[in-house]
Amino acid sequence: MDSLTQAVLGAAIGEVVLGKKIGNKASIVGAVVATIPDLDVLLTPLFNDLQRVSLHRGYSHSILFCILGAFLFAGILKKVKWTKEIPYGILWLFNFLALFTHVLLDAFTSYGTQLFLPFTDWRVSFDSIGIIDPVYTIPLILGLCFTYYNRRNGFFSST
Image 1 (tube, one colour):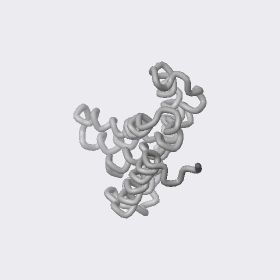
Image 2 (image 1 turned 180 degrees about the vertical axis):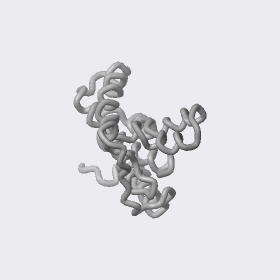
Image 3 (image 1 turned 90 degrees about the vertical axis):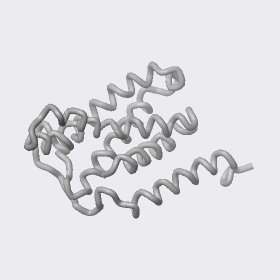
């Protein structure tokens, strides 16, 4: 899936899990964490063409990475001033959801992901959405914008 969609999905997760606690920063942190698995492309110049194919959507797109990465990134966020007061378990859940939805969304594309590395290199691919899919991305962006608008203007707030 494209980086924009991954970032918007992460921002939505940040808004849901941390939005009431840290406000708009939750969306920014969510977008950043959700794009971390794709940072494996920074390593591609170090490998040949065949190795690049298995590197991208490899270890950084595995369930094990999501679990371990959630521990690491929750520990990092626990040290940040505006997330210090949030329980570690909530920070872990937020990070896991941001990472796991990224790899799960990539599994629905034609390229798939190696979800079960290091146990097997079998590539999971449901091939049901495009790499760039506006039918998925645009409603997600609109929903996130509506959430921001609602928070600012109290559209659904109870009095």
